[in-house]
Image (tube, rainbow, N blue to C red; front, top):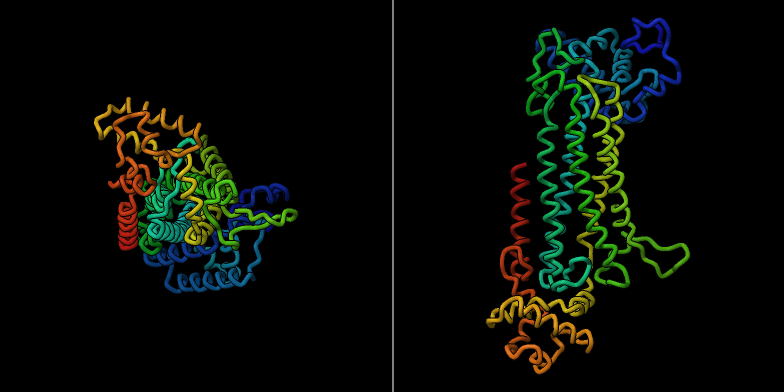
Length: 467
């Protein structure tokens, strides 16, 4: 058989593959990343084949020893990857045959590259999801501790990016944490559907050999084998689901990044990021640029693109496997890398945020952030809410003209809009009184923020215990 044709399928071909086509169709330049999982899957497959009598114990041992040696060659950078061999699977199988002879050719009994690659990707995704979850937990832990520490730090809350009501910095950070808690649930849910085993589905219809798929699934740590061989080799839902999770997560990180960029600006001056997470300007020596959050905000778009790429890849494919599916790996690999790196950057950076408490407090004093508190005060005094709304609106108009916040007005000034207002009004017009009044679950009162942080902490501990 000519080496110019791939040894795994060249028997029925009368001429070698065009050199350009060989390069165009090869995937080894990127799918070699799956080598650890490919070897892991092959060891399990060989073990199962020996258990059911398709391989002898000696053949199994030779295959496993050879695969372990190849793993060492790859780790040391000594492995020679070949484009004519197309992919990671055939490169490893060809090297195994070189090392142990004809026994190496028996490894592929009862399987196809179709179920082999589907298994490799699932093993890869399971490993990467576990790494990503560690970083996600670390980020959530950092946010919870920061929120607890800053439970009494007052800042303005915004709607439409306009000052709305005073909140605490801890309460704001816990809002971020809630986003990540939902993302965490999505990630763990995705892992359940990743962790099923296609191996044994062969090309599309299963195999005539007496394989035991439950044995292979147990050896590889899968929850179960897949139910349908056609679906098993062609399904990439799990990759789409992961990139969907990744897109939502990056959307959340991007929202956080936008706030960090705003807060570090001279116009807001709410926080300081350590120098190690920032860079300077080549021409403006005073600049300290928040590059980490800016890059995370920018990388969100590429992850969205990967989701659309995978959805489009799959939308017109008939059952079962098609060569199109080779295009799943590069967007999936990049999505994995981007998510992991963005989470690591945030997990390192967020606990190191230093709030500028005086600037936050002063900003909360501007913009009439306690206007709603004055309206609530009037309602408690018996004024109808719509009338109270009108009274406070008139008070704010006066404050704009006189350049005074509501808390800076005298009792006489406030009483010109309503005689119902009395001296006790100043208890609710302070920023501290405003945040303390929101004393219910989900509210911004400092004691509620601390309680919420503790609940989040306990939920994370329970999540670890259940892992």
